[in-house]
Length: 373
Image 1 (tube, rainbow, N blue to C red):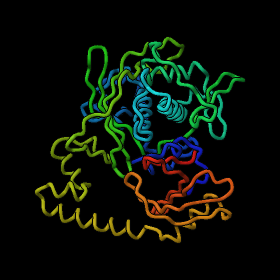
Image 2: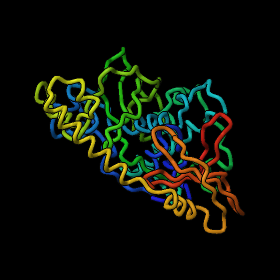
Image 3: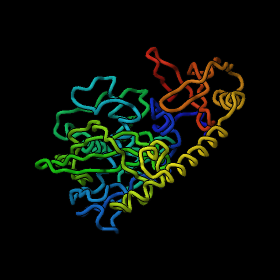
Image 4: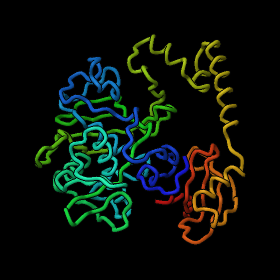
């Protein structure tokens, strides 16, 4: 899709490998692949086939019985870490890292609005408005240091993209958006005294890409506000060690065990995975499939002229566009056009080679990109 105004946090946060993944979000659309809430009394997360939690918990992993809607704050932090590339916000975080706090709050507000709907008091075209007590509750489950009184909200700038403060009714507004096909998935849960150490992954349910794997410690929530929706708070969040073999998370894969799971998984292997197997017939089938996919991808690439036409839609015909080069951002390639003109806020317009995404941005001195908000 071609976005002229990047008003959603899902598009504003484009950076690195997430340059395309968060593009397709807008408003309060409900994506089928977004996480569903777990029942508050879940004891054995996936052994009970009637439990919604099996959608985001690996077979054999047991969550605490009062886990409830904790999947939403976990998802918010993983989306923030993958999209913004900033460390988990803490007492030692710098002013420049404050985006990690407000961004994760905006994601959580959007997810709760989509799937719980008990906390948003007002909305407009861009923002979800929450009472201060609700904002404190969200901050407390995302950051145990805040619940403990050891962390304060970072300064909220007047031009902040993700949050605003309405002094008239003392509410916070958080930029509304969606996470598209991104989904949190818990692969391990271990008790550590009164805490729980979770291993969780952020996955793309369409492409089966793994955006990140994280180790997240949750502890009993000490927030004492009324109607607290979360029994736990995140006390530690960091990237987990890479596993040698990634888990297959295609539809239905979590319901398989043993040899049967291996057989079903082999049908969806990539060529690289198939090369590591001893079944030459499966290798041949996978290689043929990948060759066909590669051919389809090539056919879908647009020409430079087509890319220019899309770029011209971004700021309009009055601006001047000049093709510079094809650039790579993360795992994706873009036609890069220099742009000049009145009311032009960026130096470049980037058009993905498949024509699906159009971004206005500026390349920083270190080679990274900052995109229009």
